[in-house]
Structure formats: structure tokens, C-alpha cells
Length: 137
Image 1 (tube, one colour):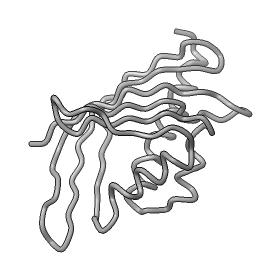
Image 2 (cartoon, one colour; image 1 turned 90 degrees about the horizontal axis):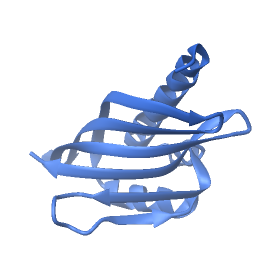
Image 3 (cartoon, one colour; image 1 turned 90 degrees about the vertical axis):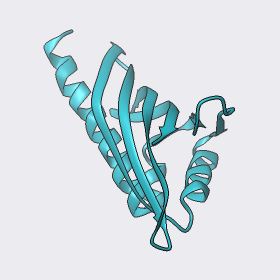
């Protein structure tokens, strides 16, 4: 690892922090700016279930928006393991805890891991691929 990699890793951490915050605040226009146009996303909400997902920025945002419609959510990403693979790509793994409610009732209280690929475009890190393996408590 080069010293400059630490700056890039911090930038990626900031990107993922915005991902969680903007998703929970349902700021979908800003949220969309976190992804490459050709982003690929998949979620496996429980072991043994086939992953659901989407491809392309608009489809990914629509998928996540639909999954959280009518709910209040809090997503926390922890313990990032980020590796800069070259000047414009990186990979990362994040532990996740999420809590979602609707009508005052708990809908989901879960945990899992995000496995992400990042791309640096026009000097900015973006999420290029993201896969969530989750397991409800």
C-alpha cells in the first residue's frame, strides 16, 4: 500500500457513508450520483434465497427505492476492508446492520456484508458493483 492509497480509501469510506445516509433519508436524486451509469447491484436477503437486483443507475435506484417504500430505515456500515487495485478501481467489504420499520412495527432487523467494486471517474469514486449478503436476526 502506498501512502496516497490512504487518501483514496478515505474517499471511498465517505462514498459509502453517503450511500447509507442518502438511502435512509430517501434523497434519491443525490443517491443516484453515487453510482456509475452501468452499475450492477444484487441483494440476497436471506441464505438460500436467490439474489434480486438490478443493472444500470436508474434501475438500481428504483429497485432500492421500491424496497424501502413506506418504511423508515437505518443502515450502518462497519469495519470496511478496502483495497485499491489500481489508479481507477478498488474493492471493498463492509459489515452491515440495518433496521427498518413501517407503521411503528419492525419490518427488518438484519445484518450481513456488502461486497463492492468501485470505479474512479472524473476524479470521483463511484459504486460500480455492489452485492449484499444479508441474514435477518
